[in-house]
Image 1 (cartoon, rainbow, N blue to C red):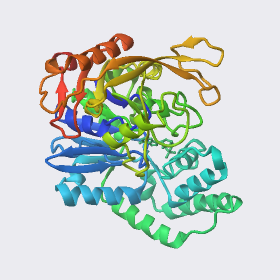
Image 2: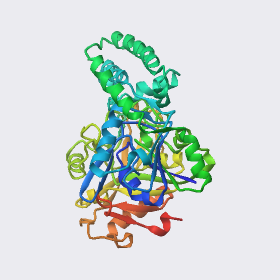
Image 3: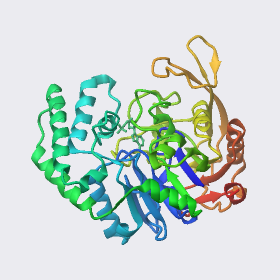
Image 4: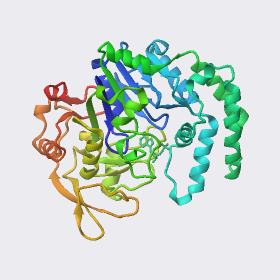
Length: 429
Ligand code: IMP
């Protein structure tokens, strides 16, 4: 079976920490969508590291890591990231990383197009990470993209040139003309040469062979369910399927092989970029969550918008992903709060209440209806067992379990690997 691990909110839930934590249980860790827009932060042995495209299993020596066909790969970012992982941690990346030949390549002009499109949107900009994600997926769907496997073909440069020429026409139409393409291309082709030194494979065969051999496999989602291109707050979304179903298409595995679906959520909510965020707190409490939770983007450094936990949104993500267990992150950020709120419903402009996510959340202003909990007002650093959590935290957990119909099997109480409380019996059923 292949287990899937996903963020249930707007990304940045702490997936990197959990994949790293779970990695010893898995022989294979695979990324299935997204690209360098992601930033998965891992902390262990006093070191902190952010991964963008490389799966979070690389720090465990016996784990095979796969960048699947659903990913968009920027060779320049990949090179930087790979060299840093090798130099800093001595990881044998050439041995334990496999890259799908079907993954799409992000070209320098994709990044430029991302910036040009955002600029043209003016006030309605999405707040893209400007890593070229949207334009690269657009070319994939338009059936004109470059794939990783193309780098091995003799006419790679011709294919590249044909697509760049099209991009340049669009950039000119947007009056986006101030860039040094020669320098960008030098970096790109150097990075492409570097990429060729890795194992570029038909990863769908690799992963299906692993399934056949009964190896344990973890699919690592990027971004979050509420940024999904179909079910997120469109158009303020990313350009890929961030849901469980994306693991099937993004790796080439049949739905019947999906096993556990780990849904990761923060004890509160954050969002980077534009778009609706019903429980956003713009004043003091939002600032406090940002400060205590160090809520700044790991890819772009942008301050994250912060707010209380949103249950209608969480339940929506649980439903669409077929989540089987919940993992609650950053509980420690709420340690000093006297009271903690949870949005249970939305009040619509006509005064009615709903616990469903309106399709037109971008146009309809909903008002959150909250239930208030008392805070636990104590540090969690000395709590070493799930059974010993303070009573107010236990009530908070029980309420979320009741509202979602799922067990919370893990609570994260700090960034380090060791700051993790696990309900082992429920987690490994
Ligand atoms: P893009 O994926 O770079 O095009 O950005 C689209 C939207 O998704 C923007 O609001 C980004 O801030 C957001 N986004 C993309 N990747 C991540 C992520 O890994 N974490 C959180 N937000 C993200």
